[in-house]
Image (cartoon, rainbow, N blue to C red; front, top):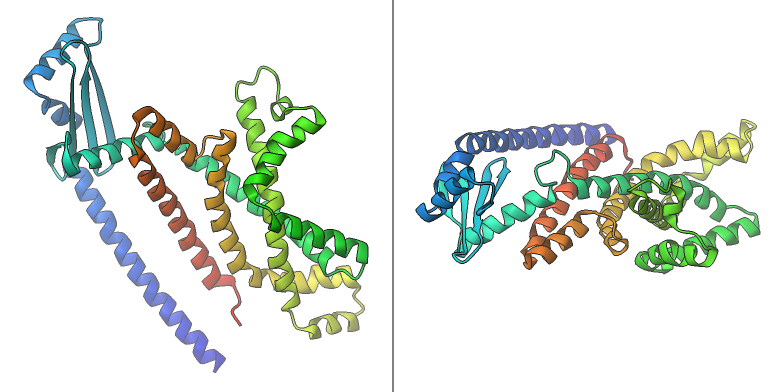
Length: 346
């Protein structure tokens, strides 16, 4: 029966993989075609009104700037805006898509143009890295690594027969699961330095221009890791206690002591059972990482807030939402593959 189930699962997995691969290929082909027919920058600039074209030509012949030209290239769609200053102030916006250029001064095209502009700025203003996303992913990855390691020790402590260790680990888990992560972040970033008379930036050299941000990142990493460690501890504890008691008895019969039994027999088997909940914890931390805007770390949320302040439009949070969703989808896809390959469902 188990063999038949495994064969069926393998067939379903192969079928799902083929469907996903076909969808990916079709999407890739569509992206390539749309990118190939996308209007060029010259074509976009050429759509400016005659009055704006005269000011652009005037710019080329003078050191003074009459027109500010903004061009955003987003793979399959681009956005171009012209803003002139002075007595005859004018603003013109255009969106290029599928070989055509559309005016983006009003209506739906205006919203699309704003979305392209905001997304472009959030992705790093033309650079090849997503600054805010990079920080979010780095913080999440390090948090989960530290959290799992810390969680193993806390879980072993909570199931320990030694009362002092058991109470300490149980209290730790209760505290960090019972208080808001944002408050924990504030306590570690603001309160602890105030109590002990230091600043997180002091961990780095005085000449380091990024010392404030690096210090904030260290504080955020500590807060997130301590919090995640409490949740990972419960994941590890549940996985360990799900192992059949016969495993302990067999290890004892072989002459193994408790540390050997845990490190060589129980924990290796538990790891496969931890995979789904740890992957879920990763996704939760990834979304919770948006809280670091409260200590001025430049993540996706902070970049969105800064753009909103400068542009005065709350539409900027829509691209932020989409970027978070894309990152979450990517990691969810990876984790699903890992779970199908390694995890145990019983």
